[in-house]
Amino acid sequence: MSAQALQFKRDARRLSADRRHREIINTALDKYAVKRDEKKALFQDWEGARQLAAETKWEAINHLDRYLEQFVRGLEARGTHVHWASTAQQARDLIVGIARSRNARSIVKSKAMTAEEIHLNEALEKAGFEVVESDLGEFIVQLREEAPYHIVFPAMHLTRGEIRDVFQKKLHDAPSDEPEELTMVARRVLRQKYLQADVGITGANFAVAETGMISVTENEGNARLTAALPKTMITLLGIEKVIPRLEDLALLLPMLATVGAGQLISGYNTMYGGPRQPGETDGPEEFHVVLLDHNRTALLADAEQRDTLHCIRCGACLNVCPIYRNVGGHTYGTTYPGPIGGVITPNLRGLQAWKHLSYASSLCGACTEACPVKIDLAHHLLQNRRNASQQKPSLWQKIAFKLLAPVANRRVLWILVTRLGRLGQKLHPLVLGKPIDPAYVWTKTRDLPPIARQSFKEWWRRRS
Ligand code: SF4
Image (cartoon, rainbow, N blue to C red):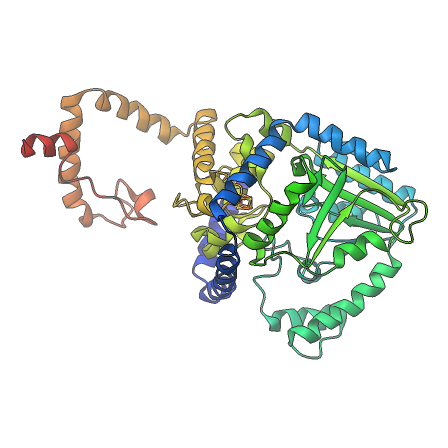
């Protein structure tokens, strides 16, 4: 078992028994579900909207070469520097290099899961830059020296009291645990950081090929300040963020807000097309866009799993996942938790080391139903499990299938084994939960499904 799998098991066991943690998460997600359903009901045809969103992303991903080139042409025409990064290391080096070339000292950053994916903050801090997260949730988890807990709600696991405590400890300013007062404390600190910052780093929600523009949707206005105040702006995005047309945003932005946060539309929706143009009064003097691959092209080449690149990082699949709701976001030990993390992490970071995340699912299908772009997540989890076993079957799997094949291929043997199994099941309670139980590895944490009292053939024979 990989070190990552051991850590997952250990943390999952601890957190699923932590009732306080579960209460915090379930309270937050239950409130979210009410708002999401209210806003979904305002769509005239939600299923039709999902279908159209899925087709739009299908078109973008299946013509990614063409749309990426069109997107880059538009950006470069307005003086943006576009960089391509094949690996996480290349992306980090590029961004550190840009910051150094501008003699930067201080960097302000808005929320970007792609930056978490490549561990950008660590690289920038190691290179000597001060990096401050400007999204409130990200700012709080940065003060706690933690990774975001959720891809949309980074500090969802914290109570007001815990936020007050960290403000008191790190900022020496926390008059009470009232959300308004805590927000004002963060605002005072962050306003200074925006003014001091030499470089602003943002992510992107969508990259519009038609206009060569980046779309950022947010609720706090922090991404706007991050982009507008520092002299240099850097946007880091995965290549899968491209969409064909500007009008596609009319569907994708409300969908993202609805399933992501239970909102009709986010508070601030901004398009960035380049640095400050002659005659404009604000915006950065220099604008860099870093397009990250980091194994996305390997997913693109996989016809079976290509549609995982349709993901718009709304977090809806996490919110409905019974495993996520019990074990929490940090347990996954990677940037993308929940069902989408279970699907893409083994592909982005190594199948054998991360395959356990594909097994962290009851395959109930709630994620597939929740996904606004109709990614069949439950099916992809199964494909990962199959690929992992094919690539490196465990000794037990090899023995089990060697034994199963002759039995399953001989009717008489199959009937005999099934009958023995039924008999064995009657005696099973005598050893259940004890290490001498032959199915102990399974039964120590799960119920063993009973063998049917009769097979279909037996039932049919008796019936007629
Ligand atoms: S897989 Fe679907 S539901 Fe999950 S984050 Fe991506 S778009 Fe949202």
